[in-house]
Length: 257
Ligand code: NDP
Picture 1 (cartoon, protein in one colour):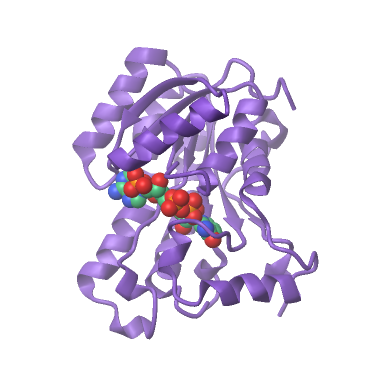
Picture 2: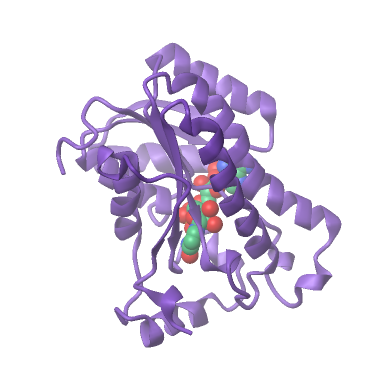
């Protein structure tokens, strides 16, 4: 896999710590020879990222701050990236957020603000960063986001985030149509449950892990590295005929009734 992304500039959004899906992605992309550019929101995540890169001897081409709830922050981040590298070939969107109180109990109890917050950070953010990234993808490109089965089916407690992921997956299809004519592809990975900081916010998360182990065809959970390699596939030319797709990396759990 060494040469798959050699010389390609890829932006990775969403490394919070070593458990982040975006960190699994980072390792796969690094092994494939990519030049990596990172965006962080919180200072705490920035510090963790610096240490992780250092510990793993991975060199970042650039690290910029980006809060996807703020258009000015997105513009500044992508302008800084343009100044540094000029052209980008890929973007990994691994960002979501909802209030903890909206990730338990009944979906109908979701507040208007909670609903809009989840949509804003978890779905609209892909629309906004695709628009910004497109300007830098002058040689074509590939955009990959991270979704979950809760978009397709009712998964207990996933509630407002399931609806946000449905919106994210529909956005993948509409964006794929928009940017396809510029040689840019947009796809999503639908990963099985993985214990991360964001996952901790969802009530009953351990039961989800148990269900996959018991019922999925492969009888085991997936990890960040498996999602990383599937994301690498979407970023590389191996998937050049694929866009607007949602690929399940979930040990096959989604096919079981
Ligand atoms: P993490 O908590 O590790 O990552 C979530 C990331 O979202 C953090 O880096 C966080 O940045 C970022 N983020 C939140 N709000 C903002 C914002 N306003 N602006 C910029 N960044 C923001 O969890 P995961 O790795 O699990 O999550 C990554 C993606 O994978 C999410 O879309 C999630 O829904 C999806 N996913 C997760 C699954 C799982 O079981 N873990 C399964 C399927 C999909 P910061 O820390 O700086 O705030």
